[in-house]
Each structure stands twice: as structure tokens, then as C-alpha cells.
Length: 131
Image (cartoon, rainbow, N blue to C red):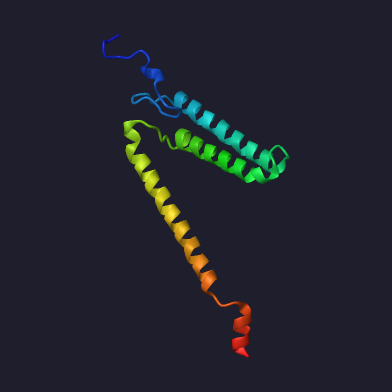
């Protein structure tokens, strides 16, 4: 064992993160299988929550949002390998930029539709003007 090697280095990884030189298929399959099981479990729980009286009826949308955010986290970590490592900085920045663009497009569309709806004439006025 060299003086620079840390014995805990192999365990100092985020879920879904792999060693640099470790290209083992078995390790990849285990990581993807854990992610698949978690994703399927969260999907099943979402369907169960939506169709049962487990949660107070007005709280169901909040519960589904929490489960959706958890599922996004599982996909980011286990399938897209977005971790806190320095090697993942460009991926995190690209993801943040993509989220910003999506929020701008959705927010701008809702803003435009809201203003169009507010500034349109009511149908009664249009019908009276055509007479």
C-alpha cells in the first residue's frame, strides 16, 4: 500500500459514480439496477398515492411533486451520473442552463397567454360588433 493511497477512497463515491479506471460491467449493472428499482418503486408509490386515500386529498399534488423531484434525483444520479465530483462540473452547468431555458420558455409562454387573455375582447362584444 502506497503512502498516498487512502484505504477509504473506494468507498468515497456518490451513488452512481464509478472509479476512474474501473470499467467493470458488473459494477455498472449493479448501479443501473439500483437506479431502475428506485425509479420503478417511486413510480409505483406515485400511482398508489394518486389512487388511494393514503394522503389528505388536497395534499396529493404536493406529495406527487415531492415524489417527482425524488425520481428526478434518482435519474440524475444513477443514469446521467451527475455527481458532486469536479469531473461533473460541465454536466451540472449544462443541466442548469437547460433548466433555465425551459423555465424561461414556459414562464414566457404563460405570461404571453395571460396577457393575451386579459387584452382580448369578450365574445359578447365581438358578436355585437358583427351585427
